[in-house]
Length: 256
Ligand code: FPP
Image: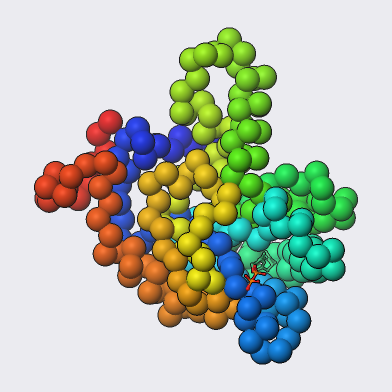
């Protein structure tokens, strides 16, 4: 597995186009309500938007796109909505795997699968397997995912695997057990739908990520909206703890 540097330990190389974008797709329910449609119609439209986003990100050579599809807290929603979301996920996996292969997209799913139906677990495994040799964009779907769950499962695995290191664990030990150990930390985090929260998404990895919040509802988040987010990212000064003065003249500094 590739080793990715930690933004708290080293200063990452900053590129014009974010290497890794993480998204909370919020606002489906409100989008539907505005049109006098049931909430689930917003989710259905939201799922369709993912295809365009994947295409746009692939075209602009974003390397990793991570989408929060279902949080560990979303089980608290009405049962019909939860079951609709599960069915939508299943259908989307079945349908989209073909176009993912055509577009060289590799699919990964993170989160606790144990609560899913056996048929959904199988579909996830099959879809990951069918795209595993693709070398383009890595699309990660976070499903029944929570940032605290992720850190805890990593700590538990790490302690079992390396008990001799107890009391001396370093960041890089922990990161190697996180569910996104195959990806660098996100450069850009986008949340649609007007709320300014991280909502238990990638808690560990977002330490130095640029945060972008927009009122646009997820089903309206088109390529133009993505471009606005990227333009906002490009205007940020990513200091990683340094001063502005230190940054002038520095394009990329990978020194530890
Ligand atoms: C938040 O909108 C959205 C979700 C909880 C689910 C996100 C799911 C999708 C975009 C579609 C399914 C995903 C896949 C991968 C097929 P909300 O319901 O909280 O909206 P609201 O805040 O307006 O009520």
